[in-house]
Image (cartoon, rainbow over all chains, first blue to last red; front, side, top):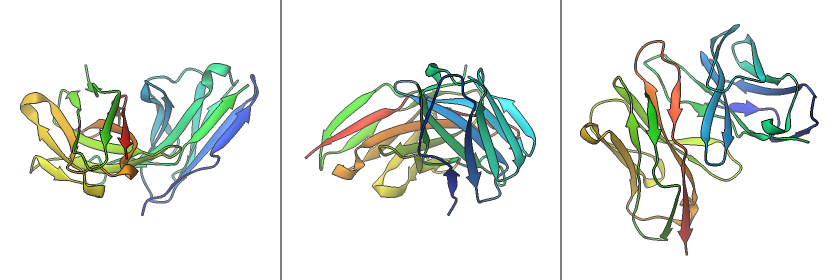
Length: 114
Length: 115
């Protein structure tokens, strides 16, 4: 079974801090994604990566950056956290072997910026 | 423009009643279609997927969905709802074109089940 693990379920940080959210998948998937989930807005794509050291902006990349140094790990970075970045963050991965396959999700990180 | 619409934000049904959650999509190419479920405090779990072939697809937990190309719809159904089905449900569309990595998610339908 595919496992996508997010390092923290709950995180509380202060305005202006640099925040790292970590995600690891164990299925050798090429693609990894970071989403933000807010009530009534569904899932919005922040960034995705289709290979090591490769990244593409999603729909709402402002205020975020990412790092993918190893295939299994995809990090989301809030360079200077702000209160409007309080949200649920979901990491996902999938493979394109055999066509575009379903995404597998982690349990999410609920981030509060005070 | 590519989009996914789930017109019902909230749905309430009684336990044992049938369920249908609506999903309409707009997509320029042949889509891959998915339904996910999210229990409180959890990530999204795949219920079922449609890639091609039979337009009625079976998923986990007794769910099924029917792809109707003429209506651009992919509605989720269950003949008899259980209290444990209370959750939020998301419809999503993905590309079949090589190199198309992005998925588009609907805004979700929250299901409440009455005992």
